Image (cartoon, rainbow, N blue to C red; front, side):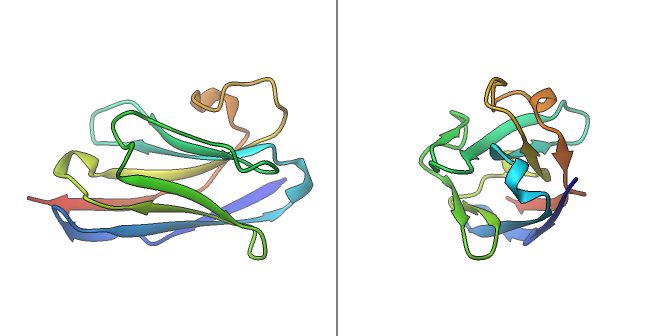
Amino acid sequence: QVQLVESGGGLVQAGGSLRLSCAASGSIFSINAMGWFRQAQGKEREFVAAISWIGRTTVSADSVKGRFTISRDNAENTVNLQMNSLKPEDTAIYYCAAKGGSGRSPYRADAYDYWGQGTQVTVSS
């Protein structure tokens, strides 16, 4: 089992920045990749970014490229999401997720085995 705890959400004005963190514990050795997803009210959960656990290869959604950066802190077993130039449409609950195995697409929510509780990000205009 892997436990994930997110932190860093909040309220920010458009154009501002926030940094989300996700601390992983438990069976860390089983993790192949970690990702961030978000779900706005009334919408489906959507992929934001992901990072491979070993090689640190990253991928991100077109809607956040150039604004959001995903990274991993080895010492802390933490994955961070630096969000810059935030827009009102970025408002959502952000979820951290972890997956084992290399055969599943990191873009798909159903590929992930473990999820955090979510953290609210609100961007005011």
